[in-house]
Each structure stands twice: as C-alpha cells, then as structure tokens.
Image (cartoon, rainbow, N blue to C red; front, top):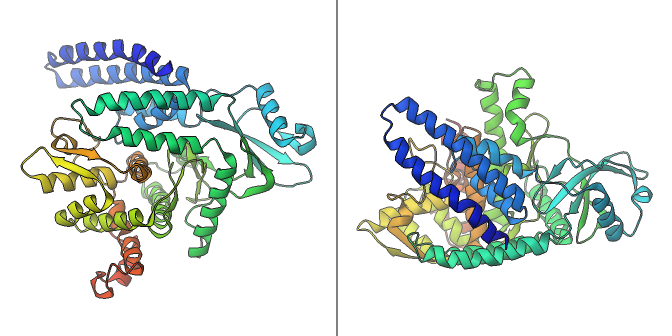
Amino acid sequence: MLVYKAYRVFCPFLSQFEVFQVRVNFEKDEKKAEAMWERQHEYAADKVYSMCSDMGGFFLKIAQILGKPDLAPAAWVRRLVTLCDQAPATPPNMVQLVLEKELCKNVDEMFERFEWDPIGSASIAQVHRARLKGDKNDVVVKVQHPGVQELMMTDLRNLKAFALFIQKADIKFDFLSVCKEMEKQIGYEFDFKREADAMDRIGTFLRKINRKAPVKVPRVIPNAVTRRVLVMEYIDGVPILNLGDEIKKRGINPDGKMAAAAKQNILKSLTLAYGQMILKSGFFHADPHPGNILICNGSEVALLDYGQVKDLPNALRLGYANLILAIADNDHARASEGFRELGIDTVSLCSNEQAELFKLAQVMFDTKLPPGVKVLQPFSEDSSIKKVAVQAFPEELFSVLRTVQLLRGLSVGLGINYSCAEQWRPIAEEALYLAGRLKAEDMKTREQSKRGFFRRIFWR
C-alpha cells in the first residue's frame, strides 16, 4: 500500500537526519552551522517533494500541510508550495474521455475553444480554460482525475491505523478523530454537484450581507455540472503564490509601503470573509491554501475550489465564538470553559494547567505567532501540547482548526503577524448577542469595535 511505501521511503531519510543532528552539534561556528542546516533543509525538501509527487493522491494534501511557512523551514515552503496547483496532470485523451462521458456530448459540440494544457492541477482534479459555444466569456472546466478517489480513500484508511499508533506514543492528541473528519471531508470533494451547491450558497451569503463581497466567488454555469465535471466562471487573476513576482513586475518595491498595503488588504479581505462565514453562517470554505487564492485587480481577492466546505452545527459555531472572545480578551478562565463547551477533553500533565491550556487555544485557534517566534514547533518538549493532553477532539471542529492554521500560514507568508481572534471579536460578539448569550451592555462598545475593525493591531 502507498502509505507503507511512504514509510519505507521516509524512514531511511529520518535516520540520516538523526545522524546529521549529531554532526551539526559539533560545529562551533554559528554561520557554518546555519549553512549546514540550509543544505539539509534543501535536501529534505527535495526528498519530501519527490515522495509526495510520486505517491500522488492524499500525499499532495500532506505537502500542503507540511509546506506552511509558520511550520516549515523556508526551503520546504519554496519546494512544497508548488504542489498546491502543479500536481501531475491527467493526459488530454483521458480528460476528453471523462468530459464526454460526464457531459454526454463531444467536446467540439459544447466548446468553441478548449485549452488542453491545464492552468492548474491539484490532488483531486485539474482545471482547463475554455469557451462555451455561443458565449463571449471564458469559463473554467474542472475535471476529476480518473481513479484518484479509490487511491486517496485507501491512503486515508491506512492513515487512521497510523493515527492510533501515534496518539499512544509521546504526542497525546486525538489524531483518530482528526483522521475520521478528514476522511469524511475529502470524500465530499469527489462530488462536484455538492461543490457547485456550496459555491452558490457561499457566494449568495457574502453578497447578501456586504455592500461589496470581501472575496470573489466564481459563479456556476447552469446545466454544466456532474459528479466529476464542473464548469464555472473564469476569474482573471494572479495566484497568490506569484504575488511577489507580480509586485516586482509592476515596478513596486516588494519591501515598500505600497506592497505592504496591498498585502494587508488581501489579508483583510480573507479575514473578513472567513469571520463572516464561520461565525455568522457556520457554513464556510474550509481549504484556504495558497493554490485556492487569486489576486485580481489591485488587491481584490478571489477564493476558489469549494470541494472542502463545512456546515458547522449551531452549538459549535457559538462555542467557537465564545472561545474567540476568550482569546481576544486574554481570558484564561473563559478559554478553559470554551474548551469544555466545544467538547475538547483535556488532561493536564503540568502544574499551570490554565495558562498552558490558554497557550494551546492560541496555537490551535488563532493566527498570531508568539513574540519572537517565526516558525511554530508544536511538538517540541516545551510546547503546550506536551503539557496538556487532548484526549478527545470533536471531529466537526477539525475544519475550523485546519482553516485557522492555513490562514496563519498565509499571513506568515505575506509577512504579517496578526490575530484573527482580535479581528473577529465584533463578529463573535454579534453572533452571541443574536443568540441571546451576550447582553448589549456587555458587548465592549461593539459599535466602536466595528468602526475600528481594521484600524487596530492588524495594521500596525
């Protein structure tokens, strides 16, 4: 099985890494040691890239997780981030077979023009630019890779067995529940009809509650959706992965004020959209990795790929709103209550449980990095997860956790350290107020908070 093949590839690499750690410890020159680490990271990144690329399927999603700038060395990020939308593509003849079988028409009958070279290829599907007969606007055609569902779901079943082993070892976290939720959510991604419905629902919601939606959502082309093919509006833009190159191309100093303002506007739009989706609606796009974000005119943002969405139960939506207020207010006691309300069962392995539990809440559910920290090390000896064991973690909360982690990776990649909890405070307050759980006099000058929403710490 592919998971076991990955173990065989990775285990010798881990052994080499342990030998390297011994060697580098003998190097007394700090600059030479740093150079040794950089070479080691480049080597490791190539190894992981090759493994994930060769294995395909679920391992491409593993690359997305490992290639986050708040978790991985820069060499890993540079190498692995390319797998977000540059995965191995399905050949044109196979794409044509899928299209004609699903749409019950010849490609030439339906399309005025079809570009066979994909504009992007990810773990489950690839996308092509095309134009429908009799239309003046281009569309995007999303086509599922043949056979990928069986491959990926087999990998996930094997991963559950591995999760049982891991959580009995040194890392005390309920990984099995996380794997179960991943299996369920990824299973949904293979139904493009469900994705089309999610895209319509989220687009309508964001347009309804805003004078101008904070992010663009592609519109679905009617009568051009099946389980394995999805035709949607084409949105012209630059992948956020290429933002730095685009800024330089326009003659803008990448370290100057204009570039900083553009990046802030991008993060501002994404933060507002996700705060509204998660805390107001409970139905949200749960996959904001860099391959799913386009930058359009100026710093306008388009959010793509609605295969992974989550409909959060009302109790968890309000429980998360309560935890957001606890984190934003630095309220340790309320954070502990929030964990219990959300059904996160923890056991203290230290003397200062409440303080460590609050740190764990920040690491799991907020985007802000601690002062002086550039890369998180969640499994180091002094990390909170080693001091507070998570015995039970609600499966349905995993999508929130993953979304916040991806937003943090984006913010670190853009060079902005901010707290989504602080920015979502007014949205969380409103959600709790409308549910009757917060009185008007307790809302901490809610209207003032709203007016100053994007003038606070985020932009300093």
